[in-house]
Length: 337
Length: 179
Image (cartoon, rainbow over all chains, first blue to last red):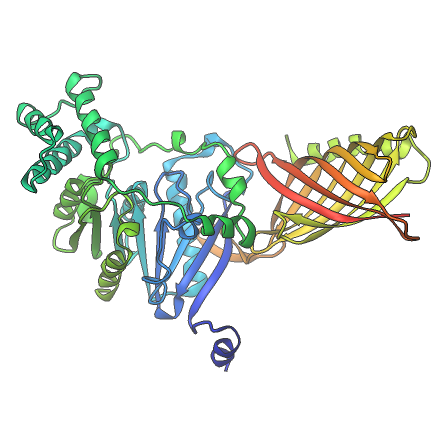
């Protein structure tokens, strides 16, 4: 009866929610937004990038365009980490830590499980959120049923740990460009650099390192797509939603400098094989921040439970480059649960 | 600064309006208070003149109000501070004001507390802040018996402390001054 009335009056879909709730944990208030088909029994919890990522706002500004791809089939939850978005509370900058961040994620998942009692919980990490969602599963095994890794970053630490992947990324892109007929000497220059530097020493301030970063920046400028913010979404957030976007965007980012990996856990790759759930890794062909090479390493570390989908022409926000394909990646994983 | 210190600070600031000027308020105003224009609320204000020299006037204002920011919070505030106002020869009113005060927001979405692994619902949870608001005052006198004038007051506000040190708000009030 309620469902029929819902359809008749407002054209909504039974089982689809557009909910907001607040989670109080350790003197912090973390706002949570849930959109989509909770009646499906599957809840996808988003761990944003950053760690100062836009959280809840990512849906409205168009960075997570799941309205037509995921939400009709599953429910998707976003939350604002303490120190970001509309999160508030009586706590200090010094209270921030990786352990606190993982504890907050656990509180959010526990609350969502209490409220909705989903059959399956899937973590969808993006960029830094892939590190935190991986760490969460290592410290809380058995809570999550599936893991989507978008822009794999199993490293939270200095550039030294990323550099070999980024070198291989630059070399692969140059090689592919030359193979596809590009005649720009820029690609030849990179290829020559790669031959001369089969490895890059993990030392800062070397000429090779600086040269590589010049190449990476140039590749980003030339090839990597970047999502544009939807103006309608921004206006809707500011004037027609629960969100105080102005408040969020004008405040200083005080969280990123405080979040550091525990010593010895800057690189989770050696531990990642302990994650025993289906894993779907998504990478963008031209994403030099978390390149396909990192996705390949992650899939090898996880084993047969993991699949890699590379988005041709995609960047760090591959979910905006090809929303339909990204939706298929997530729903294929959900089908395995 | 603790919440109780903020409340004490407001109490310390507000009384001049009452103690220094025992006369009846010069104006009483009622308004629609729109946080971000579209988050609806209401406010009431009384103004005491500190000098009576037209066309320029210095007033002390005391204002209370509240607004509903859907799914975020129901906020109640009390503020006080001075306004400088100029009344034009044709009845136009132009002013600027600055207020300090306190605000309490009750979270408007279902709220859960997680403690020791237990999840439970919480009623009337919220947070308190000190507030500062500054804005402009535009309006005109009216010839009616009841309404003395209308006004529109766009304003910029800050809440403090938040984790980020300061939170920002925009608002506009549109209302009438009563005799």
